[in-house]
Image (cartoon, rainbow over all chains, first blue to last red; front, side):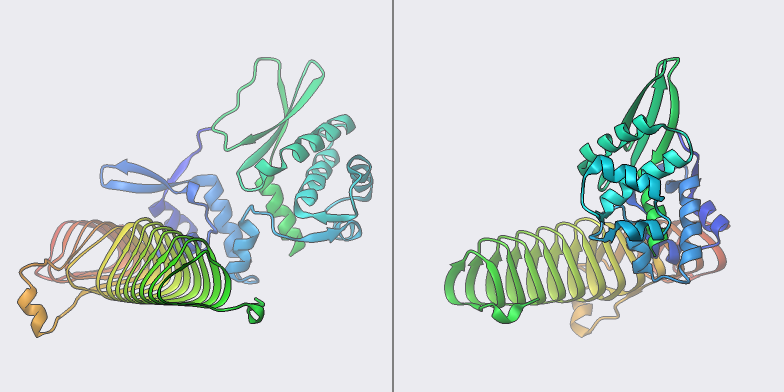
Length: 207
Length: 240
């Protein structure tokens, strides 16, 4: 997945922000270190960013910074799981999960009614994919199992969940920091979900 | 922190401890702590060796102290020499003397009067001070306001307001001048408002850029304002 890059100068111009703001956001970890890509150009080294991601992030920061402090924003963007717990009822009330999906999840999970952030993520991803009709129930169970087993890996990194089908057989995988993913012919990628984006969506619903 | 129930650790003369949780840790003379400590106040007078990580509300070094781990504190004051091999996360850092950090530094305010060196990146809201500093990575600060005296280096400097001036020096300072060349050497400086003296940089980018005396700059890119001292050498100036 070679992404389109944008140089720092063009970015400042396009997003109408100053060096001071960009460096401040970097200090507050609102912009991840991996997005600063150094390349040598004829004027010496320059910094580039993945264009789509950075513009989307800056948009978000600008739209939210009126209501939230930078530190609160930083918490939101950090993929680390904070020690938050919500009850089942609350999740349904906040529209994070529908009742049917929640019942299914509980049936599978057999866990308590109190949800930590990692369990919220699991049930949220399930909800998202089932509601969009991209996966069926069995695939949902498979997905939960993968998410549960790989929970430790998911915690901090840039993770994506990929679901593929070939000749009616589906499989589900978690990929971390991928450059590219290629399958043999005949494999259909049903969906890819960025877990980090999901996490941000959840957090924005919680705030 | 329920530090009220904790005891104190006081070493007077020669002694060592295995660390732990304390209210006050006071090392007078030559004290060694072999493991991590977590305390309210750390006071090291004389020679201190701390082989683990340090977590403290307030830490003060008078004399020499060597930390083999990282420090996490609200306040750190160094009067003398401190060497920190790990990272330094501290809200307020005051250096009068010399402080060397091997890893990275994250802070809100750094006030420097002496020599400060960082192996990796240094992220701070306000970086103010005098004399010498060396940053191995990026110095990322909202405000950089320094008076340099002697040889200073940073790989990159980025922030909002960046002011680098030459320390005018006392009478004794003028006697020593031939030994040291007062210069800041840096690859890249980026900021909104930049004023530089005695700086050698490959690239300077900013909105308002003023280049003062004794500067050697490869390329200046500015968007709003630019001025140049007649004693400055600039290869190329562009408005973007």
